Image 1 (cartoon, helix red, strand yellow):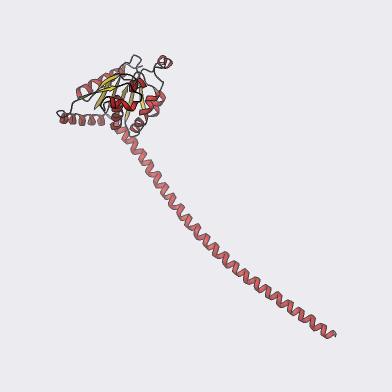
Image 2: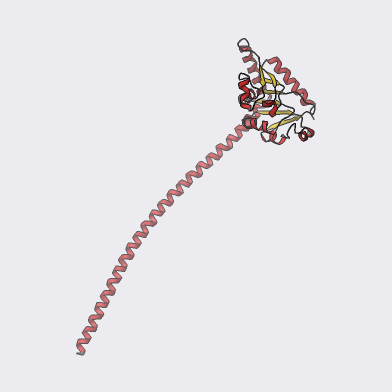
Length: 269
């Protein structure tokens, strides 16, 4: 009986040992599978990481190239602005205009009548004047300006200025020179005749010339054409009052206007 028990114990130990070995084998197999799967996932992640690193490298190269071109563009813009403000450029542009004026002298009149008719909105002024409204023509003149814009208006209201400030900002950003002659009177501001927009003029890159006794109203572009008018840059001047003026392009008149502006600038405060 004791021998039988011994063999039973031995058999149980063998079965237990075999079970343990089988469990270890299965665990080892699962561990190997997990290791292979983990290695595969690591390889996949490493591949994705390399792709992202390559993409980041490309983006960095593109950014460096973009910054280089942006810097060069800024340099070219500054050079263009300086060139457009040089006396040589102004003289060449003036000569070109004179040549064009001589060629077209027999085909086109050198002056046109402009007017402002009181209306419920600025957009209807052109309709009342056969497409010759003051503000409409001023906007077109600013859009066509290449190197110089001069605004002479004793009284300027912010609301009206804002209607042309966007075009003026685009003009100065491409190298154009803007000069604004105005009264700049604190008493005018207090009475509501005008608004202090010196900050806005500077913000679009314009030069301010203060002329306390100013009463003239002139708007000139590129020393090619000018509007001589009774209209200020105010709501009344562009849509509320009866205003009239002339759009002129005669070289002799333009020269007289330029001389007048320089004389005013010399005695400005």
